[in-house]
Image (cartoon, rainbow, N blue to C red; front, side, top):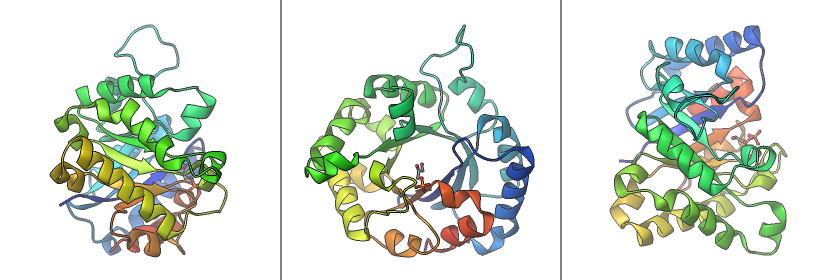
Length: 255
Ligand code: 13P
């Protein structure tokens, strides 16, 4: 059975006191989350708090720390970069790869993202690979082709086993930080498309095993309806993951 995953992406937010308060606030309601091997929570904090998160979560089953990025290089003279090896040594289990903000502001290409995924998987980190179209592509009704190219140029280069250890997040760029969520129908349509592409490229059984998360203005009000869709296996939550009570409510809305 594929995993249901609620992942928070704090992006470049929260100072140390705010970060500690947020972790403690999320954990305060842990007993109400009913987590299991197939329903987990992932929190991607900025790097400086990552070890605090992983140490705290170690005491709470099925809660995991994640990184928001990793280097495409294994190690060496890359000032300011953080390798998969460093991340994995801090008991972190997941890493977001290819967020649209990294693609846009740091010019990360699908080719570089594939290298990052390989680095991550070499260290047993599970990549959360992000894909999704900008507004003009959606308006031209070209989003399926756009997403297909992102998949083909990156994660469809992986072996079956590598793909099985990858999570996909569909994040339409027009829905990120805009308060304009994709409707459950719009999101479900793309998730089903992605799953079908996996079935065609690999096989149906693998497609059924891969978790596909939706991201883009998920909040406590719209989460339940989105998560009820057949091919939506959870959410990658930005702004709403910075408020402990709201993030807790989103986790609780995953049945
Ligand atoms: P928002 O939830 O703030 O729209 O951000 C989504 C996102 O980019 C998560 O990675």
